[in-house]
Image: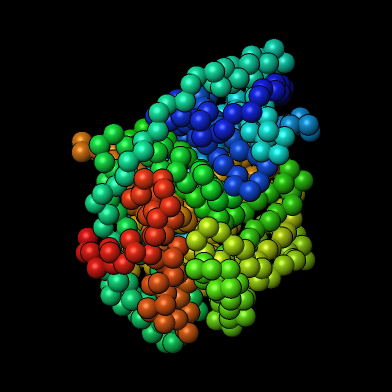
Length: 457
């Protein structure tokens, strides 16, 4: 589709705009918490699903779905149509054949959208983007997308979304941490990211969208919603995986190192300072920076990989994180699909060396599915943006309603203390649990976590 049309409309909140279409297959909302643009996508013209037993190369299929590079309107938003995709963690078994057990989610599922709504949080207006083989077709698609804004929002669910929350036992997770520390001391690896799970069911009348609506009052930079029939994904991820600009500039921002927020300003500042000065957390972060440098070097010209920023403290609603930045340039002739293959799964949620860490994880966890995979968009101009699917809830509907799973992990190194790492997972999961078990009003999720800490699934 060679032509682009852009039409402007008055501002509407992105979550309200999604609300009427929340149950529609492949309805998608990408929310940039703190950023400029969010995107609502519906009505794809092509879809791709790669289940675990599909022997085709998913990265070739993805490149074919994205298609040849096309120009976009320089006055429009960064994403002007293309592909949105969900890569499950086990897609990594297509890169390194480890024989990973699979979840019941596809390894890769994608949809190609010829029209979208883009929400400009700075200008406070909405643009409809349409693409077509000629200008008239593009204009018609943009005009069609504008009509999505005319449907009233559906009523939101105000009560508790979940009343039967179940968590892995603390001692089970701490034992897993101890086992990984022993393997590190034996020289098998340097670091592994081990996760703990929480599960439950939504109450009657509640839907995955209702969780998104609560999280969107203070969204993370890579918040998202994706509906896939009897599956749905709600993410409040703070972490970028890899980004590619249309000129081939690559950016990744791995997160490693966490502290909870303090009870008051003085304690909060003290915890942030403690994180920044922690030799353990800095070493953990640096390991993943080196891993990402190695991954990016596979698809970049020699000497183009750089680390412009190390150990920046970033603050979110419930935690402080230690974040670094790695940049590179995509080698001419390669595409975002090549970069995804070279770097998947994200190093920040596997460990180092990556392949050995993945083997250790597979022995300690059930298949991850979407957790620690990636949600991404691939634009028609060659641009690419992707998140690491942490702070993410995976929903599946059965004859009893919606069941869900969420996980939170910690990077385990030689200096790790099992109890401290377990408390880190609880700090990370707190916002999700509060949204699931609260009613949208402020509450003390620390007491909630304490109340569920000894529940065995």
